[in-house]
Length: 352
Image (spheres, one colour):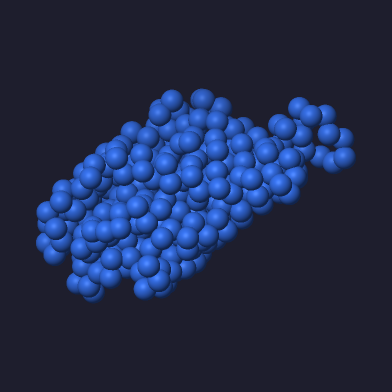
């Protein structure tokens, strides 16, 4: 079962679910069509990492049949991810997502293009995006519950699913908190990484799959030992790409994380190493929404010259090695081990 085939099956399950929901929304009002169009556009992109980790967590724990129901349960994670992305973009005032306007920008443009005069476009766009994110969150639970997984499996999985949703909300708050506090240490940034991304992207999807299969405590612990460090390495790579990535590959403008003022591990490593003048420049430019190309280049130079980038890359290697060691020792099938090795490379060596 190749990763590409899993992705195709996840895509098909997502499309089928949204298509089943579509008539219900449109029967309420044709005015809801733009909501569906925005969701369709967002769901058309993405790497489908969370469903892949969920599926291979299921296989690692001995899951065999019925595959279709597990694929549907795993695909529901993409609706949870859509909710998180939509809300995250509102909180960060992001203009783009996956190479296209973010949801709130899309609805702001709709209000302006239609010439609606009943109120300002910006609050409408933000409010609509929040509602769309809420809808995706609700649908993620609905898709999981109606996936076809038997009741004992759903009961086991529901506990993990609920915990995952709680953790990612807490991680998002901690991210906002670090941003408004300013400063920030590597330790504090790593706490955000763990709860906003690492657990939610890899560890909990693996645990969800294992729970659906009724995996043993030994397998669950082995997946934790692999998934947690890999999840951290994944987010650290994402932080590097947020500053140095190619916009054509990442789908976001160059240096967007710098404009948004994200207090990442990369920034914390830089501030710990910077001379007072360099640190003052970082503090002055970081979070400036009007930061131009010259400002982005100035921050990039400080990050590189201080050794902040090298330190972050070293951390990625360390956490990836921990994951690799844990996977080699995990009591799982050879097929699942190979697939999880490939996913580890995809998560940490990617360019977008």
